[in-house]
Amino acid sequence: MFKVTPNGKNRLDIELSGKLNAEDMKIALDELVSKSKDVENGKMLYEIIDFNLPSLGAIAIEFSRLPSMLGLMRRFERVAVLTEKTWLKTVSELEGVFFPGLVIKAFDRDQKAEAEEWLSS
Image 1 (cartoon, rainbow, N blue to C red):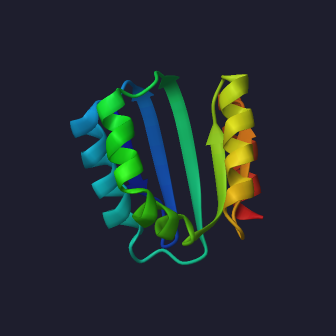
Image 2: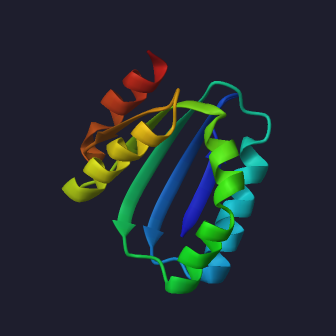
């Protein structure tokens, strides 16, 4: 499941759980693009509840949309990632290095209040 919920004018909350197949990925990315089209200097709270590697088809869909995803990420300045997996925290924060102007900070899932405060600061 990949759920995108607007939370105010310039914020999106995303929930990811389970494994995404190609069709799920296509729907998720379409929803992300649609719901972020008017975002400027945005913030994102990305909660990874139960991560499973996506299918190869889903990865292919994601790579095929890489140029539009890069443009989308320019609309955001902060992303807080909530996850229990240490390696996902590391990868998430490293990903922020590749997007000038974007800061990604990872938190444990039980640190949602701290993540919310960081996004607001």
